Amino acid sequence: MAPHLSPVIVAGLGLAGLAAGPALASLARRLPGDASRRPDPFPGRHALAAAVAGGVGVAAGLLETSWGAALLTALLGWHLLLIALVDGKHYWLPDRLTLPLLAAGIAAAAALDRLGIVEALIGAVAGFAVLWLLAWVYRKVRGREGLGGGDPVLLAAIGAWTGWTGLPGVLLWAALAGLSVVAGRAAAGRRVSGADRLPFGVFLALGGWLTWVFGPPGL
Image (cartoon, rainbow, N blue to C red):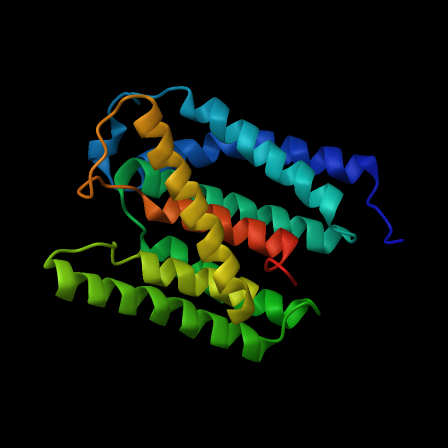
């Protein structure tokens, strides 16, 4: 049976997440510049971010078997949370957030024994190619943009963490999350159409962390 981390480490990661969450929410609101310094229309976002970041920290401590892996998993979750907060508010995935995540994924592949560097590089290339090609086909068929320019870069960064074998799981989780949001809007009586905008980066971030923690479905 795999050893478990001490409750002190688990609690410490949870408390660190509770502290980091509001800071991430504030940073996400201010990243685009002065226009974002207006009063936040959703002040509860800080409490929600604290709860999610705290949960990420606790889950990392409970699911990993070494403190280094737990810290790395928590940091990945917090970075993805920041990306999700930015995309959810601004529909924007800046390279200054996604490219460091890609580099960190390759570094994690070198530091840990769960994924090789070659597989991480293949995952990054495949992740970018899949969404770039999907966006290109959609643009040719529909005559308008269907994905933001930052989505392929984000999936490339996630692919560096999960490897190419994790990409189907990432996309599956992301699709299920997106469909659940659409279903929730329909159930609430809101009009749903193909022209609706959804921050796909939020769903990719969720799928990336779940795939990193639980592995590709069926493996």
